[in-house]
Image (cartoon, rainbow over all chains, first blue to last red; front, side, top):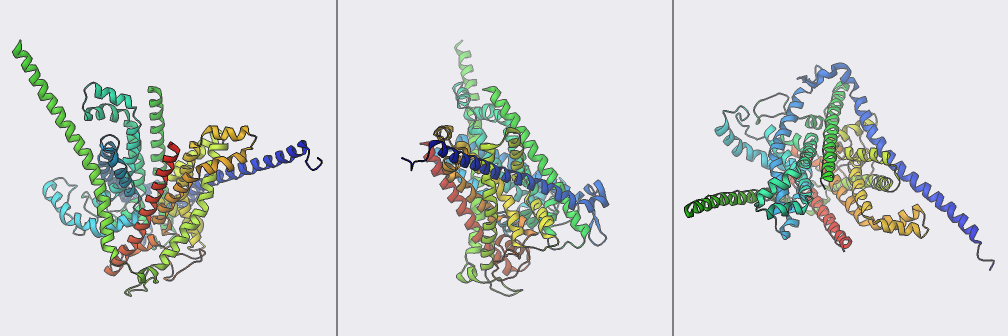
Length: 322
Length: 294
């Protein structure tokens, strides 16, 4: 009988081990979470720190400065911000209706069997590495656009200054916008599909029972009750388009001038950073690249926060409606 | 009276017909949009495969990178380098991501949880070129490029993906399982390690595989960290490691058509890997969902 330890002793030992184990696991997980916080803090600090030189020299005028001259040591981001805005605008204009339509197809229209397959294919589109999409962009899509689509647009819509004379190689802002659209579509489509699927079934059935056609149900019930969510999805897509560096660098043709015509080459904030990866000559130039990254960081954080605010308000609304 | 009724019905018919036509049109538009997306995927995959597959050969897969302006050459250094980079990045991101998710679902007080959740969300929206500049400032200036710097940059891309995927499966673990374990007298840590984690292993693996697929194709984070390298197989992460995405980027920018051929062939390898791993992860996910849905 004496071989069995007293219950009290057993409990004491077990309790101490449990106490230690709990603390250890808690400490470990807390440490990991804090490491993530620290990394985010370090990113902000490094970018602020690194862009200090350029900020000290150019101040906020960097934002609209229209010279990028490594020889004279003058840098500005004006045309890059313009290029970013234009490429993102093209991307969203093309991608948003397409993505919403795909979301509707996948959630409302597609037959059951097709749904899974097409849904997977759309998600695979998001998995294509940007460098591969960019490679395809330069060597396949850009020449095609340059030879067929852009001349056609110029001939028929040339009276709008946006559609100026095309480049033969097709590299330019227009092509970059379309490549970005390809990247944005699957993001917005898969989020909107989830949104549409979460619309209460009774609402849709109610509309159908009242004699509405499928489209009227979609417009009146599905779309109108998920408007905010779709807006958030588009903002998230915008975030992706803003920050894409590689594919854009490959197809935008690189140029530091503001053109009205979409077919002219340009540059975005992200593509300029990527394009200079081997050629930064001076500390001031490197600092200017940090400055560009800091601008991107701010825009990226703001778009993300806005998307989250929209989503949380939307969830609140839905919860209130139930 | 009869005439009026007739007219009414006629008008109704016209309107119904119009509504039907609009409905049909919109349905066709939706279907068309889905077709466009699938067609783009098809066109990209087919044109990469058609241009690249012909260049693929045993020699190409196992050879060293071509020296300057020489024909031939292979991509063995790129495959090895990419594997090391992604492996190291996973070794950093997987434990940190899983532990962070555990902290959020099991331990964190509400306010801290919200802050960390925000950081995870912001990190997943971080442009990868910003990560590249950050890592350049943190690890590359003064020390030079290295595989470690590249792996660290990739781990920042992977971390939010793994953390989120883990969080999602942790939330799916039924409360009753946890409470059952606690009621039997198991401590917190035993419950987590013995009940919660094993039950969510499938989801964590899926999330990690997806993150690996994503990281394998990321170019921007490596651009400043590990882009100037030797053209033979390198295995020491203290030096810059050759890798597939950066080399495709360099070859694509080159004016030499030979380089374009190499870029296509390397793109076949990369795209094949990324698409197959993504598909495998999805299949895994579907299977585990079916099992849970039982």
